[in-house]
Image (cartoon, rainbow, N blue to C red; front, side, top):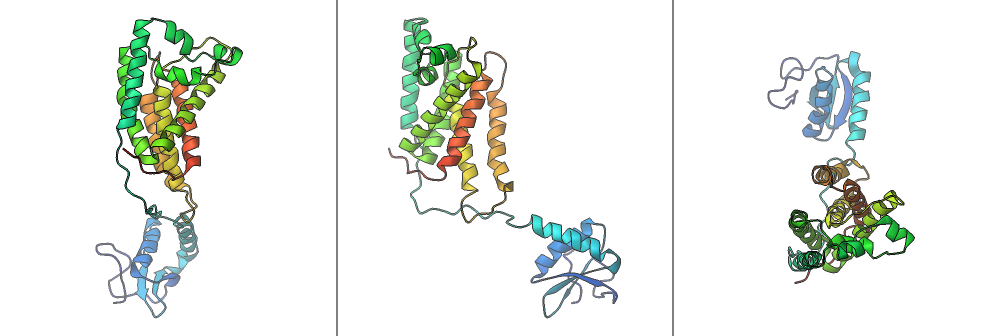
Length: 289
């Protein structure tokens, strides 16, 4: 058969007949490849013909549009390099179980601290809340960590407990127990340190586990981005917009709000987690227990 268009798509004159005065825009190994390039011609509003030959399948167009067609086909070929991306290589490692044990221990610790806040009103907040002047002027560096265990009220506590259990369990299942908690602690502390530096030396206080929750979200996002940038995969950056866009969308949906929401701490926690997650790459051991 002389003309090989896909069904129901007009690509020339009468089926089975190819005009004699056509010009060759390209030649392709398979009819599918030829038809894909023919769609570029159709998008230009021009017809095309696909004819088999000994060398492959010839894409024919009208001579008057040959130069424009070749230019568009070159653009199409450049944009198609490495697309679609190959699936991430499966590594020979045991499947990680979704772990709740250590996130539940974290939740218990936070609830015990909240009980202590009720038992000794104001004392724990005064000693452990994130305070830039206490942090930088008096050297009370423990506040970048202790502030993560303090909460303003019961609603604040419950919101962070529910979110933290889900996100931390996903993080530990992804990165492994020891590695996941270590990276989470580093990212959360870095996020608190950054937001404190942004407010120093002005009056500012912050408390709550939300910085750690968004740090965990950043770690998962950064790890997913790094997985798409592994050696042997496409060098193009287009695929990373999927996980990065998802992470930023969750940050925008749940990390912003009216006062007293500390948007700055959410952003710095996410940014620190994103950077550490990308640097940490795909490694990690299966979670135990």
